[in-house]
Image (tube, rainbow, N blue to C red; front, top):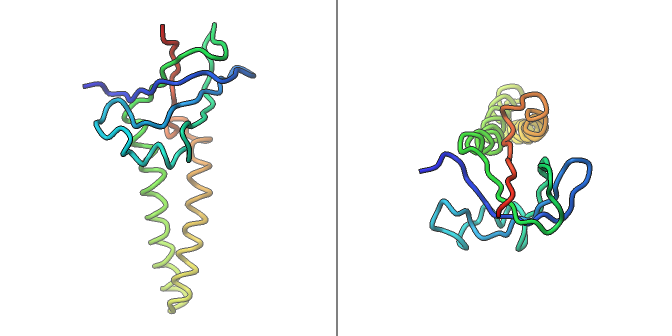
Length: 141
């Protein structure tokens, strides 16, 4: 059992040391759900998801590559993207209820918690590189 998740992709273009790669939405190779997987469809909204990844030497448009990410990094990204906002919404609702002592205040607190969560989840990867889910790119031969 591997500790990384891999996807096949095609390089669309390379600019400024980054490769724009197209990942077909078909489910990951490590699970049996394939086309029933909703995660890939949510990420791209179509038949392919476009990602920018640091390019390695010798890549050109049209090359087949393999993207991989460590399972631990994917788990951290899931916690950051799903659990943190849910916690901050709940905390915001409780604080709003305690401060305003009304349902409207609780709803406003929950909304403020959501806004804070969105800002925080966007800012954390910039300050803590370990929180970002790094993708590695390898040419397929």
